[in-house]
Image (cartoon, rainbow, N blue to C red; front, side, top):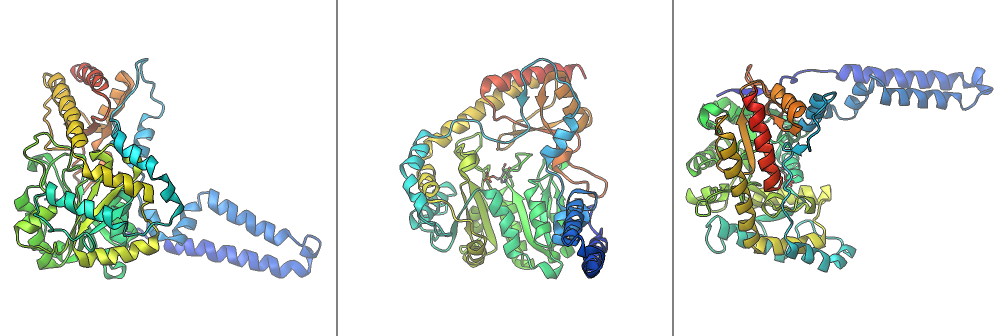
Length: 466
Ligand SMILES: Cc1ncc(COP(=O)(O)O)c(C=O)c1O
């Protein structure tokens, strides 16, 4: 398997940034010292000149160095995939057909009415400051949900020490790296490739090196953890896994998770398991396995080194409510809670109440799954005659292997059929000359069924014409 560090790794523009700062300070100093002569006539000129220099630095090509001087890690952040997509589409004129957006993974099924009612009924809670650890009732509800969903057994999860509410998994996945990485210790953060880009930004801003493990077609889009060297495991402080995967939909089997847990003890790293798509699956009797379930299966009853991330965004079609949780190793969560108390990201009280009602109900989640099931079956049937396409293990993305370069495919599809899909290479990094997202596009089947059918038919016409 290919492991790789970021290609931009190793650049050092810091001296230039410091140089510009020194120059500005010197100019302002010189101007101030001249005040007694020429500047007596124009007393405010030195300040005006220094303000103008600052403005120019903020706006001009020097901006890069100016920002670098603020926090050098910010310069390592890559543009988000959707920015790259806008640039790709710029200047293309689509045909006069209704636009169909398949690029963004934003659920579009209806939010459950009873959750919205709970939100409204508890609006008066907005006049209190919430606790970062959330109310006991929310933590208890989450603990019971985990036990039931992952067959952990009664009271396997301690609601007080092993559960923390978060404002959506995105902020938590990001913040987690800041809390657990030792910035001065040359640590690395391992993450899937292709990936959810937050993992990479989290690693950089925590002062760690992102290291990518590929999840490519050759391994059924699953990671080959056996191929990671002991040296890489030694440097690893944090391992992000994403199961079901975004964009691949692949579910990491329980046996693999158990091996990973053993590795985490051997090499002393933490596993952050992003399971935010775990409730979108196709066979009611075989839901995707989770990391806590694997921990119990190998006798790790305290969930040592294991932390899972769950969300209501996809499960309950509530992406705007910003509600999720982390659960697992109590020692790690204690430190994460400390971090979060300073970070100031407590969940608003009405959202806590609405979340309780959402986690307590499974019927709306079953209905939600049925809608996705129907869309996958229909779309795959329409596309199958023209391209090899298979239902993923779980999740709501089709990860389509394209017959031509993925960016070209996306651009032409937009230009000829007014459909937007996300090129796979925008979701992954080239490691040792290979980009595992290349020749793939991600299509989120989030639109209503009739729109997905129209999209599939237009896509079929497009592929036929290639
Ligand atoms: C893999 C993955 N993890 C986490 C998130 C964040 O979800 P949220 O912050 O809504 O819980 C997303 C959102 O699309 C995602 O795709």
